[in-house]
Length: 373
Image (cartoon, rainbow, N blue to C red; front, side, top):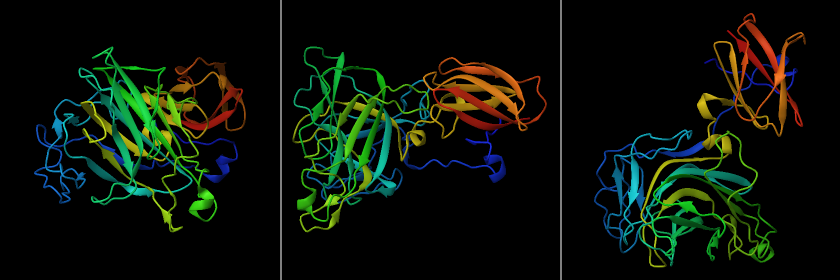
């Protein structure tokens, strides 16, 4: 497979080639020794950083109770970039420790963070008084409980072992539950959590009250096209619920997204047993959801490709592009054709080695400068 060189316009030939860098701020495949606790020998009321895993126990009266263990069966999900790597983490759904791992950088206001992960919930025990199993901490210390961006799960007592329902909330509020979509128990699912950290409103907490603009969304089993879907499974954007990054009561800036938090059963409700794996946190959809089958994503909408032995493989959306044309650098049209959704192949084996321009046309237009070797 050849490395792609990207451009949106012919002018880029004059200005050189650009390189896109992913901003992954946490990746966790639980590639540690199997059949051990995530945090070794936790001590109550003392923050215990496991220098092997980088996870920390949140200080609590149950911090000495292991509830997270490494299992040697990694979760798999066809097409997901972190499928089947390392091991996995199993929560046994008993009252005990909660754990967190810091991001490599904190996410502050007017930014968006994406969190993707694989999860499997057995669903054999009914959970009606649900609690959240995952959240984002606003700091990296073990002694405070500042958190938000919470994901909840419940097991319908009418369908034990069959259906799981989903809830989310931005901060300290009642979860918004999805009563139209249910996902199968005992099945590995791909979740993507998107959290927009809003802008500061005004210059005081009073001015900001009721105008909070954080938005939390979650996608369950999204299409693996390399392109963010336009409609999430569930969204929470209540302007009365405080933002993660905001003015505090002393009118000082407070908060950020700084670490990922995993929870077992808490005092407020029940958390189902779950196995989680393949966690990736980034600042864009493309950071966490690499394009399938080695395809390279451009910054143009819905346009990803690879070149293999003079065959050009495209993944596109026909809502944007329905035809292609391959041109020489002088503008001579060499190959043309129509496109189908997602998977296309252009046979360029008859062409000489060199640089060409690939145009996609439809309701939008995109171009890439490609090198045939």
